[in-house]
Image 1 (tube, rainbow, N blue to C red):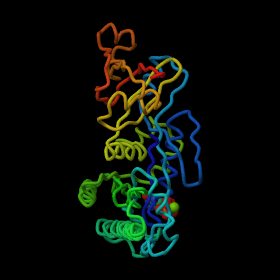
Image 2: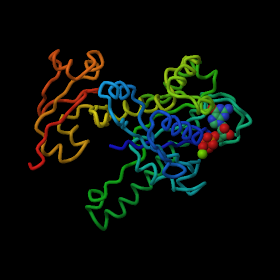
Image 3: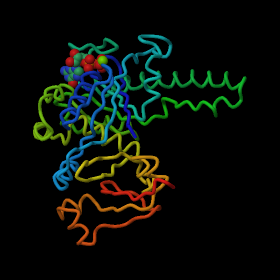
Length: 334
Ligand SMILES: Nc1nc2c(ncn2[C@@H]2O[C@H](COP(=O)(O)OP(=O)(O)O)[C@@H](O)[C@H]2O)c(=O)[nH]1
Ligand SMILES: [Mg+2]
């Protein structure tokens, strides 16, 4: 699946700064041409340190990470559902996304004007107000959609069934708080913001720092962020939260020609995982030869894994685990 995440939030909260940082971090994470499709759409590889390890073990020619698509969705302002700003143009963009990344301003800087033109006073209560404004617009947009569906259903009782329309308020949301350097290490502020958005996930980033890391590789970023007691960059944090919120995991395929990561649902069976590669693989599924990434890394080669008795043959009912390294057996003529 090609995971798609829409970035929303009030104007001047740092959406575009973060979009640039996310797409740039991704471009650096792999030697792989990741184009920005449109100025506001970028496809980014999912950082996965396991791929490099497998690449070495298999002396592979090509590493292909899983990908995530980010869309910088502008135009959501108070009254947008009633035509303010760009009006309802954001709706179609959000509808196509699997998850929403809601960027919330939590940094102090009176030079950068808040959407409501108010001075920065209380980060927590202003964050709450900002979140409420956006969520109200999404709710109003859904109400409008529901009214339209009701109207069409009067003429065609099967309309809703034939035209399933995803509601915006049903999308999983990850709240990305754009904090300043003090906020990054302010545990009481962070836990208050976390509580505010529960049960949705909260991640904390500093868009300015992300911008400063533009030219750093992944190792340099980690070291730089460690000095702020931050584990991972915005891309890593957001993808982790998105995989969790959407119940996703990865499995890996590895060989001389290619080492590759694939995104599937947690709880997916082996045939379903095969289907992520090709629908024919799912239809003609026979078996999966599976070992764990951890065993492969520890033992150093597929041969050693087999000799240690850690290579398993699994059938149709096998439930995939994160980090499974898999080779599928299938019959295409089935
Ligand atoms: N001080 C500070 N300024 C920021 C931060 N993030 C963004 N900005 C600035 O805020 C302004 C608006 O940012 P932008 O990303 O365009 O916001 P958008 O309207 O949400 O897309 C720009 O001048 C950014 O440089 C931040 O974390 N700290
Ligand atoms: Mg913008």
